Image 1 (tube, helix red, strand yellow):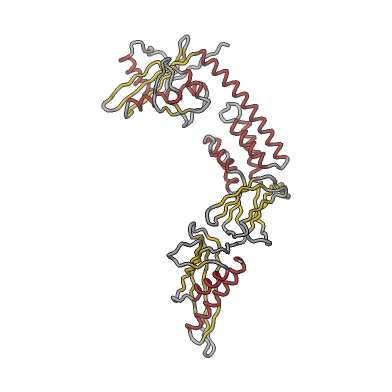
Image 2 (cartoon, one colour; image 1 turned 90 degrees about the horizontal axis):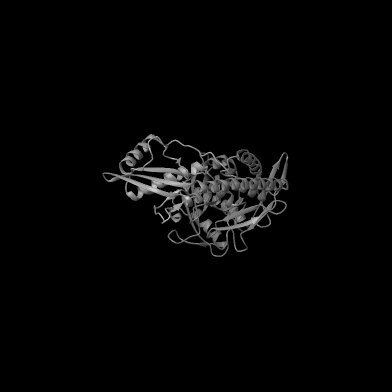
Length: 448
């Protein structure tokens, strides 16, 4: 097969000037001025040149110049060059090939590096800095083989992407959303870098976006057991919610050490997670979807990744929070430190007594604790009193948080809880007691 070899202009005039100055001074056999320096050809080889200017050391200059030449070689063959192309050091084998282990490159570029021959390395020192020129030559016979290989590989990858897309559509029609998403993303990954696959990738993205943005994860109460979290995944199809089975859901709880559990939805779209008979945690999050899906999107090149931001955001936001709260009853340690504006501890004492009855261990502020009860309480007085009876109103907020993560588990608020007494102090004390009893009743209902 006869090919018409491509002809490229030199990278930029500045590099051309440096190369020609060095080449003319040091290499009598250098290419003549009227020959394109990179790439250019003779009967048997293509030539690629790379340069580095103002390098801190000769080694750094060699590495950067080699990267430049290899990148030019890759562009010539239509291979995408990414940040993966890194030359750690330039060593040359006896046959003038570059040590493959000294170059980090994509799999599509590695075969070309294997055939590249180092023709010359020309350094020029300027003070304590270096300008370095490297010229590679590439056998035309090897290029024929590699070009044929690339074309064959690209045809195979295109067919593979089409097959994955077809399987994804079939799974999508069968409400097998997890399999469909996996195949859609695999098809996009396989088609990366294919020159004639932009229409195919657009069709895949459109189908994937439509699927993911129609999914909805909801929390469902489990009144028979407050330590159980139940969620349901559905797909919105017009006015109908279609349950999605076999979909991965990751439950993340924060009782003690962080615990993650992966389950799959049943045929009705439900997934259930139990904290266990020994206790539970209100800070549970259900995340629908496999972590690998977001990782696959993040690993794509910038252009493809940006086109899938809607899909990525939809996957990340497919969450539900646990309903209800359940503390363990076996010796959990808890600190109560509610700020009472008048300096008393009546509310603290009543809350501590109730928590202690439930089996929680009350500890002081300087001891290790699993949970912290915090908040504030203040009192206001009525301007209208009857006889010797004074009235007051207690207002406040109570919060329960994890001592380690400070994640909030529960918040209670109360305003205008009345109390009465023969003087202001007694009225304020009665209002605070009533506020504390109101909170203990609410907490008992949630914690027992």
